[in-house]
Every structure is written in C-alpha cells, then in structure tokens.
Image (cartoon, rainbow, N blue to C red):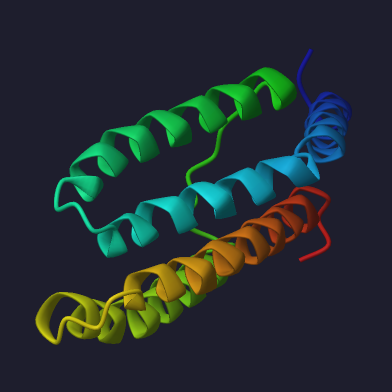
Length: 149
C-alpha cells in the first residue's frame, strides 16, 4: 500500500517509536552519580603519592565506562554517542570547554609546580560537572525525541 495514507501511517508509527524511546531513555539517578564518582577517582589518581596511580586508574575508568554503557543498553535497549549531531551537542561542548578550563590549571599545579591535591580538587569539580551535564544531555535528547526542540 502506497500513497498519503500509508505515509501518514508510517509517520505515526515512527513518532510512536520515538515517544516510546523517550519514555525509557532517561538513565537512573545512580548512573550519573556513578559516572561522576568514576570521573573523580580517575582524575584524583594523579594526586596519589605513588606514581603508578593513573596507570591503574586508566583501565579501571575504561572498564567502568564500558560497564555503564552496557547497563544503559540493557535498561533502554539503545546507546547514543554523547558527541552526536543535534541539540545535545551544546551540552557536549560545555563539558569539553569546562573540563579543559578546570583540568589545564590543575595539571600545571599538580604536575609542574608540585602542588599536591590539585588534581583531586579538579576531580571533585569534574565529577560533579559530568554528573550534572550527563543529566542535562539526557533531558535535551529526550526533548528532541519527543519533538519538543
């Protein structure tokens, strides 16, 4: 069957699918909290007194983020890149700019000027920041799926 009625039916089915995806796309609160905690631990590892702290933190952070991705896929049935084109890109850019603004001075202080704990402080700021930006990103994405943007 072709024609305007078929096209309208297909469009209605697509809109219904997008609405269903929007209903299940928001991650639970603990997802953002755990992402923030992992981010804090990763960056704070640069402030540890033993030099191989980041070498341990890098694979742990990678494994943790992969695990969070798999949990999100299991909960929602999908995964979307944070750097996807569209309205969510604004949240991604805010995260990049803010994290570089925090990370660059903290690295200079910790690694070049030997100010112990600077990266731990940066880890706190970045951990809280990613938790909030993750939630903001999801709200933008859900609004986009619902056709509100």
